[in-house]
Image 1 (cartoon, rainbow, N blue to C red):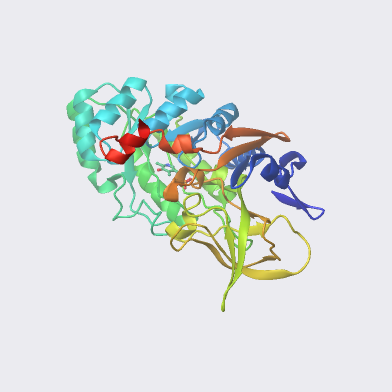
Image 2 (image 1 turned 120 degrees about the horizontal axis):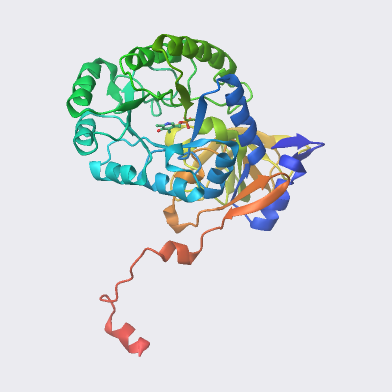
Length: 421
Ligand SMILES: *Cc1c(COP(=O)(O)O)cnc(C)c1O
């Protein structure tokens, strides 16, 4: 979304206020043009013929968004068997899907095998069971390189205390399991978690991965995961993709030369591809002045966008109903019956009840983390593509809320039975 002559506009000049009118609020809107430019940026930064980008669909899993990524030539990164199934329904072939679960049962992994997708294993116990059951099914192994590349401690996953991956110190035992069962290791993987700020730390992790990879002779790919940081505020730093791309590309080329064969370089970004592609529109129900604060109370809450309350994520908020005039300071809160704050001390153009506010960076981990808390309906989702808007998920109804519930009739009172006769 951008400002154009004092009006907010989406891709192709689409007016977000018109979409709020047409579909109602609260509303998630995604722009394919932003997803594509991020995808192209990554492809350019890692300019290798054998680059494969697998979109991490837990960030935003609408099936139409998956289809769009498929049309760009992306593969799919999945973390549950449900995501695998949605990916297949979206049209990805099994070989385009990599499945990276954590702490799932061997039964779920067996299901992934029966669907034919790439399987990435992140602990020795499952690796052993897998080797006994499917010795000839190629596997990828998730290595924990024990690095902390930056960011929020709740979303860092590659450090020593993390539950993810097999420690690179345990490589000798991986070899024992692989050799004993006659397994074929086709990929080596790491994913260090979100918000890489320090490229050098990431490169140290990559060195460890190259070291481990050099010990496996049947590799087809090395997967460096993701964790690319995107800006949330004007002054925010983001991962320097271009610099990282240059460094990884030349190092990877050198590795392949030593290895004696060209391997595929894989990444699995979620946030980088979709965060900035999304906005979330809400309507202001109440402007409430207390002794110390001016609150703007909106028709949504942590049930629709939990990131600020869950891990202090910052979402820029603007009043798109009014782009000119004086600014005031607001604390933007939701309607959920507990502390439900979206943003504190936010300066924006003066808010009147009924105005529409837009949250930036609402593409990743927003809708997918939403819930029905307080029995609220989840919002609709709209995709803006080449100047047109498409509804890709309808707003929920009471019927949707009750669909999975069973209303027992054993608790009826005599009065109820009388009146129902
Ligand atoms: C969540 C996840 C990703 C995507 O991370 P982003 O920070 O959204 O890019 C990639 N790979 C795996 C295994 C994940 O769990």
